[in-house]
Length: 236
Image (cartoon, rainbow, N blue to C red; front, side):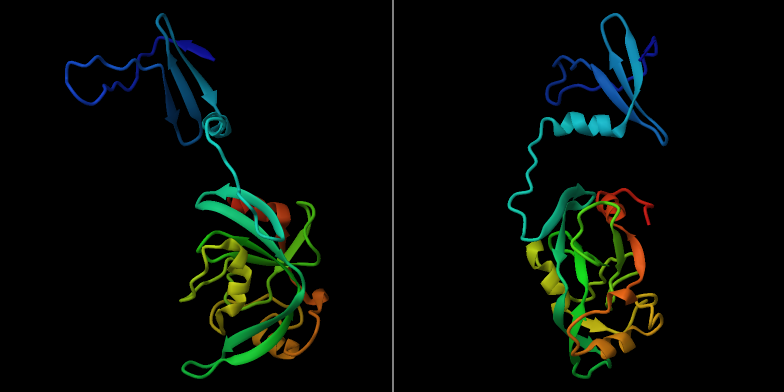
């Protein structure tokens, strides 16, 4: 903490009549590009000290009540991200019915595809992020893999197109597989055997009972996805 005679401060008065007394400024927060300063004003001296964003957040959170409510079955974690609540859901390996739009204005192909275990990071009413995993995640260092699916960007975020995801996050994984998948978009590096042809992989898997997990392509870790869902960037 540093004492200062600097009187630079923001002055303001209560709204209403002009003759109301000014409210006494006790402290002000200054946010710069590389630091955050807390400046205090007392009767006989002023002071300033560097604070962290976490300190400021904790002060306000102390006066707020947070609750996740009842979490969906197979929930892995919950956090409050930049855009609201985020819930990560686990879906074990299983066969999913999918619709693949091979040609425009033609009926979609109906396939039954075995998929590995999947982690969906969901926010109400929004497209999720999806990753493949060998088993239900149990620690932050666990490896996640690229989801071997269409309609998924390289960072794992789902491209919704015209599909509307439900507000109930517990329904989002099933809603993902109920959407129409298309051959457009970047689908490279989703399979070791078919690195440039995801359609060939799907046609090969159609009707099979299990996904060949040795074919999965590594992407990131559970901890990196948790950090990204909290709004911390640059993790993968």
